[in-house]
Figure 1: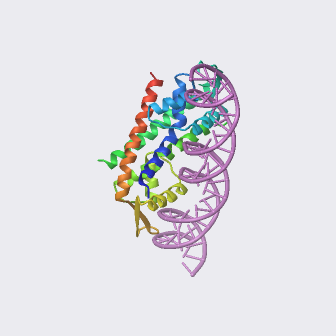
Figure 2: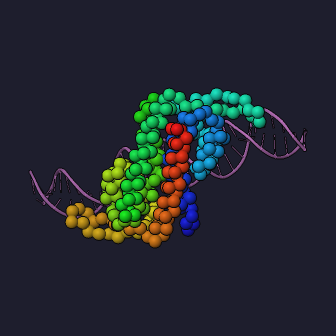
Figure 3: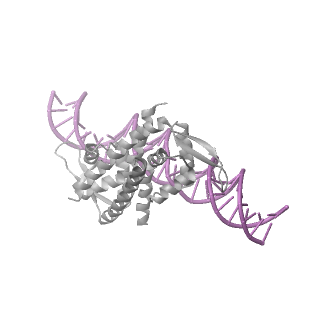
Length: 115
Length: 115
DNA sequence: TTTAAATACCTTGCAACACAAAGTACTGAA
DNA sequence: TTCAGTACTTTGTGTTGCAAGGTATTTAAA
């Protein structure tokens, strides 16, 4: 049995839960295109694949949390810059609360365990 | 479009990521049976369904992270007490690190956003 | 003795979604 | 005109949370 696999798999699971939240957070401080979002996440050790990010952005657009505009690049093909909508900001506030609730829940379980 | 649904769905996503971790944490401080684990999670506002918990415990058992023993109850049917194995404790240490990495990642993105 | 309520555990089918892999398209330099 | 770099997209697969429905045990009331 591959033990590192158990951990790796679980890191994926954890990442999963906060991906939408992270992306909304990033877009709340400025418009970005997909590759740049992926890079910003990588900078804080949240590794996410293209095949995850693109469909997710499309989904958030469909839900009305994001919009996008095309913008020329000086290097390479045009970029799809995503921006957060008013609805997106409202939802982000809810996710903020959800994150705080969750992390304080985990902290309280950890306290009991590592007394 | 049902907006509360977006949040609810995402809380589910977040929960998802930390479920195995929470359960290992709980079992690291003492043996418990499934209903009791569900209740302890509910106490810290992590709501998880039976249909999630039972298959998960079985999976963790198969992976060798948990074991169980049957124990009579003074009220109702016998209970399946789960206990964490040595391998489980090793994996838990890895999940601890993963959790700290993830939560500090989120905090650093939040700092940029809410300057 | 039968019925009901409480407790506990388990299974099935569905839907969501992360990701690897493969593909399309644009640009500029060799 | 070929290649490398950048960017966006789609398909298929595997995992897994959960609602719903089910089985089994115990105790107590009717």
